[in-house]
Length: 639
Image (cartoon, rainbow, N blue to C red):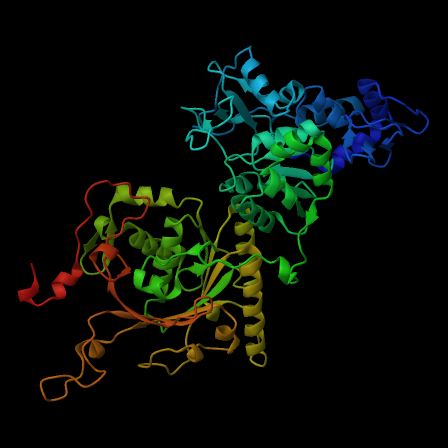
C-alpha cells in the first residue's frame, strides 16, 4: 500500500501547529519559546541555545545543531505505531477519508507466513545490545524479540505491516570462524524485504540503507529514524527488485554500507540501480578504519557515540559527477577482482581471462555460423550458472524459438534426446527444473510495436535497476531502429555505440551487440574491419569476437597429389573457429577451434567440457558419458 505523499503533506498542513504542541508536550522540551515554537533538542546533546525549531512549511521540527527532523508521524511511531498506523491516525484526526484495508493482509498463496512466539523475558537480548550501546527503547521501537533459546528475533514487515520474514541470531558476540551467524526461521518462507521498512516515512527526509539490522538500530539509537537494513548482507541485492516500487517514493537515499570491499561493491551496485541523481553515501573516515578497525555504523556508535554517527550522516557525500573523476582517488584496477563472466571454455578464457562487466562485446559472423548459439552458451547459460541474469532483445528469433534453443543448451545432452535428425526432446522433469532455475532471471523484450533502440534500452535499464540484470543481449543491430537515414547511418551507428559504452559503464553490465559482417564476405574469415557499418562499431567497444563455421571442403582439406595435403589446407576436424579480434584489457587476440554438438547446441573441446552440468542439475551421480567425437575417429582408435 503506497500512499500518495501529497495526501500526507495535506494532512500535516491541516493538523498545523497542533503537531508542534504535541511534540512539545511529549518531550517536555526545555527552554521552550511558545511564540517562536522552539526549544532545546530532546535527543541527548548539549543545546543551551534552543536549536530545535518547528518549521511551519514542512510541519516538523528541525534541530540546527544535530540535524534531526521530527514530525507528527515520527511522534506516533515513537509512541509505538507503525508508519501505516501513524498515517491512518493522522488522516482520522484531520478528516481525510482513506481505506487502509490492505494493512496486515496476507496476499501470497501457498506462502508459509512465519509465526514465532517471543519470550516475555528479553533479558539476554537487552544485555547483549547494552554492550553495543543500544537501548531498550530502541529495541522496543523496532519490535526486537527474544526466542525461548535466548536468540535475537528480527521481524521483517513489508510496507503493509505484514510479517514476511523472521531471522534469528545468537544474543552474544559471534566468534571468528563461527558459521551460523544468522538464520531464517526454520519451516517458514522468507522474502527479500528491508528490515524496519514499515517504520520509514517517505515524506520526512532521506532514507538510510545499512548493511545489517544492528547498524539500523544504531542509527535509530542516535536519533535518526528513517533507516532500514538489507536482509541478507552485501552480496544479496534481491531486495531492490522486491521493494522497488516502495523505494521509488524516496527523493533521497543514503547508502551506509560497511567500509570493506564487499560493502563498497554493494554501494556501487545499489547506487547504479536506485539512481545516482538521488543517492548519497557515508564514507567512514580512513583513520577510523586503520586505527580502530571500524567498518560499520554500530562500531561507530560504540566507539565514538551518537553525534559522530549523525555527523557522518549529515556529511554524506554525493556520488561523483558522471564522466569526471579525480585520477589520484581512482581505485587501482585489479582484473582478478574485477567482476565479470568466464566463458566456460578454457581455451577462450586463456585468451580473454573473463569478460569484465562495464563493457561492450561485439559478436559478429555470417548467418548460420554460430553467433546465437555462442551467445546462448557463453553469455546467457554461463551467466546464469555464475549468478548473473540477462536481458535479451532478439529481433530475428521469436521468444518461443529462443527459449527452446536456450533450454537445450542449458539441459545438455544428458537430458536431450533426438527425434529424427531435427527435433530436440528435453526430459520433462529436467525442463521444469531448468525453467524454475531461471524464473525471474531472464527477461526478453516483447514489445511487438517498437524496435526502437531507445525503447529497447529503456527496458534494459528498467530490468537492470529493478531486477539486477548484468548481461544485455542485443541481437542484432540490423533489426534495431537507431533513427538513422542513409545519409547519416555511420554517424548514428557511432552515436549508438557511444551510448552503449556509457550505459555499460554506468550500470556495470556487459552488453553484447550482435552485428552481421559486410556483404560479400562469403568464404572469407571475418576480421574486425569486415563488420558491417561504421568503423566505430569495432573501434569503440572493448571486445570484438567473430564466429566462423568451417565448410565441408575445409574439413576435408585439399590434397597435393603426393599423398598429402597442400600447406594451410590440411583437413580441419573441428566445426567452428572463434576468433578474438579485440581484447582491450588483456591485449591477447587469437583463434580457438571448437566442436559443435547439435544435440545439446553446445560448443566444446572435449567430452568433459561438453557434458558440464549447470547448477540447476543437482545430480550427484557420476558424470554423464556422451562423446560424439568418438564417432569421428577411425575404427582402430575407437574403444
